[in-house]
Image 1: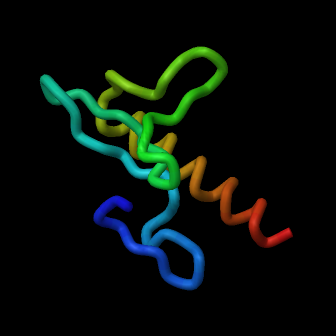
Image 2: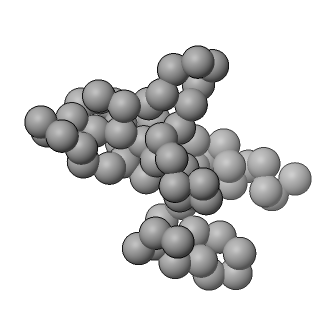
Length: 69
């Protein structure tokens, strides 16, 4: 498991996390499977911080809505 812990079956700070990579690029990691997020055949890697943070926030928001139903 990643440094984020589970609380009540949910990740503190959300399931998806912006993560700093090589050469000051960013990725969005799915902490449940410990891999970069995949959208179609592309991985969410090599991004700038703002885009990675925005995508992780969006995915966490969608995950919260999905779990609320």
